[in-house]
Image (tube, rainbow, N blue to C red; front, top):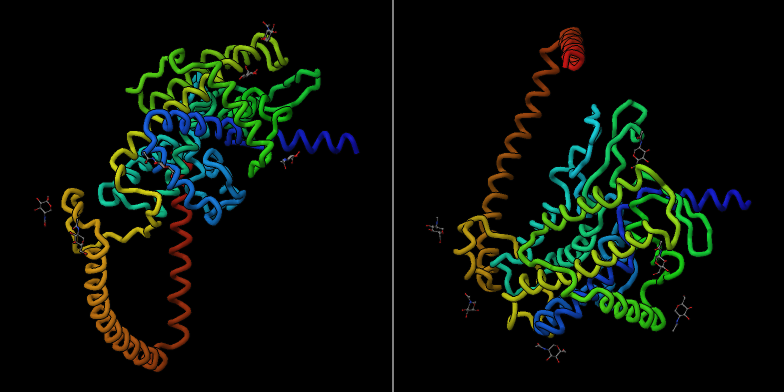
Length: 421
Ligand SMILES: *[C@@H]1O[C@H](CO)[C@@H](O)[C@H](O)[C@H]1NC(C)=O
Ligand SMILES: *[C@@H]1O[C@H](CO)[C@@H](O)[C@H](O)[C@H]1NC(C)=O
Ligand SMILES: *[C@@H]1O[C@H](CO)[C@@H](O)[C@H](O)[C@H]1NC(C)=O
Ligand SMILES: *[C@@H]1O[C@H](CO)[C@@H](O)[C@H](O)[C@H]1NC(C)=O
Ligand SMILES: *[C@@H]1O[C@H](CO)[C@@H](O)[C@H](O)[C@H]1NC(C)=O
Ligand SMILES: *[C@@H]1O[C@H](CO)[C@@H](O)[C@H](O)[C@H]1NC(C)=O
């Protein structure tokens, strides 16, 4: 029984987890909030308006009671499985790899270069700054903002950017599939009470060196006790790592942040792992990695504040406490595609004009299709009658046999071509 329990918890821990924990994510957004409230209250209000919009009725799994909890939305929606598959790969960049022994063949996700946090971020920025929707709080913008506040945190983690390849990480087919952002790199972690926890290095960092896992577990939605705890933790980390001490350079891009993270993994984590996979609470590696990860959290928070300020300044004076959620109007086809030209069309009246002219052309199209369909149907009935009368069953049979043979030849050809590759 006890062994069973241990096994279950080991299995639960060793599960592939590409998310980083709730508290660090919420800290990143809370630091951004604090900074915005200090520097630009109006932009803070705008972001709060966006984030509050869906907190109780949107595609949430855990209802949200605070601004900060929106940072976890992107993980919460993972329970929808395939329904949110397109966004599953937005939490990391899986292609900054290290393969020091030049091993081949490598098994990589063919989507890694396109479906990743960097491309997602760039597209989210386009959505949030689309001139056609400035001043309109659309449902889509609400969701994309929630993704953004999450992935800025993720990308500051050392193991959300690449994989390490060596002989250990090999699948059944003999392909080197790497450590999957540290998810396959198991470690033994000894807690402050000396208890051993088997886990992986990805999880170690996502949980801030286990700091927010067993001893400081929060349950969401946050109740009053947890809100007090969270505030205390926020005050502590911000005081410990003052903004001036972090050398935050605002000219750095999302891609630079990811490079920094991967360099931390390469310089500070993998050299250690190559000699050891045991970490004890309070040892050298623990102390230095905990310090490193806390700096990343705080840095991500300040960078997020700066990013939000840049993104939402154009909506100052436009998004207010009483701005309703608006539904994105489809872009009319008979419109000029250039953004400059469409700026003036961000207008409910104009949009509905386009809609009604679209409706009229739709009606005309429906009539044309109706007539065409009727004619086709009549022709079809006639051809069936004709076919039945003139084509004998034997001809019928021969045709289909030829077809199957032709298909088989093609299949064989394909297979041999593949072998030659
Ligand atoms: C921000 O929102 C608060 C509460 O709704 C309001 O009292 C305050 O005036 C707003 N500040 C700005 C600068 O918009
Ligand atoms: C908040 O939840 C925790 C654990 O579920 C509980 O121990 C605590 O008493 C709760 N606090 C309040 C104010 O309900
Ligand atoms: C592969 O790298 C890991 C550290 O990431 C190390 O624990 C393991 O021993 C290495 N395997 C080999 C075969 O060198
Ligand atoms: C790690 O940090 C703790 C707390 O600051 C300290 O007591 C301990 O001596 C440090 N460990 C090492 C190996 O320096
Ligand atoms: C589309 O807009 C651009 C820029 O405003 C303008 O130069 C161009 O002539 C327009 N094209 C059409 C077909 O209206
Ligand atoms: C939007 O439509 C209204 C009429 O309902 C008009 O007064 C206003 O000037 C339009 N705004 C723009 C930017 O075209």
